[in-house]
Length: 460
Image (cartoon, helix red, strand yellow):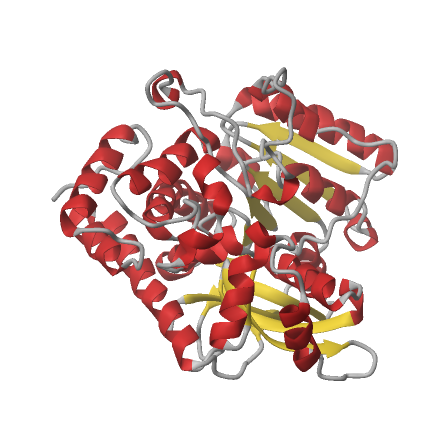
């Protein structure tokens, strides 16, 4: 067990407006981390984004009263020097490429409801982020081989599987999807999330709740949850949880985190996400978003009522919207519910910690699920590292759906390593949202051409 005399935490992709502000605040609000000499290194290849992060970090450090050295660099090797923990949240021109991932497969008849982690869109998202993620891990092997990689980048399971299989770096994938599921269950039960003890596991963005108990009494609340779900209004948060409710009724367990993520792995989910029709909607006769690199507004789901805006509404400039995410509110710094910093606290300070949902290779944790597939489940952490908690087998139908994705993971990673369109085609033809063989071939060729500046070079 390593004894830490100091801490250097590197944030790769420090321009991430989703994870940089919350991670930095979590670092500065940790008394444990603050008890050691601390260096925070912000690294990003986008110099403009990095300057926004620097200004935010300087203000946050001053408000916290902590003594923390701040490094800001576009040089990955410089950032990794003497690193203890590396937090990665990377994405290049996220919405520009996502809009293609969402639209183009549907044009070929693929029934995907989203394009982030699963389906054909998720495959191209994986191929774009695999190279940079493996590059980070391989530079860590050379510069800071004992450091941990804490990954927030999606597609989470495929990227973490690649790092753990193809490098010697200790890595873990982190996602807040579990907490989204707990919050949904609490709303249906009309209780507070903190009053519940929930066990859930499976695949990232396709996890399944196997136990719901009262945290104090230990009472099994699953029967009550099933009853209340049946009694609940069918349209309540329908775009978010309608599919989850139907899967509960069909397969006996409640999936998380919500329709647009769970539905990526299911052939018949397109009837359960009405907002899919307006995700990045544009008029193809009048607009060319991929040529102008100005994708339209992204819609997550209908629960936030995204169409209830005035006709005079104008979408904000991308830079303006970005800067608004790096703002500290009147309430000051706030600790988030993300798991990245609790992982660091547990390992660096030998603090036994239970985290309900982390992504690691399946080394026997989940019976009936492919070995060495990246799975998401409960873990115990301390100074010795991260130990997955063994769980009960999932029902056969659920395990079959997850194992199909495990085979797709393997083929997509092989497609990257072998530069093979044929391996990518195999993965695509296994996907439950596929339309036809001819369309799968055409989709691969079109996407490889449209995204050639960022995808690995693949050949038939």
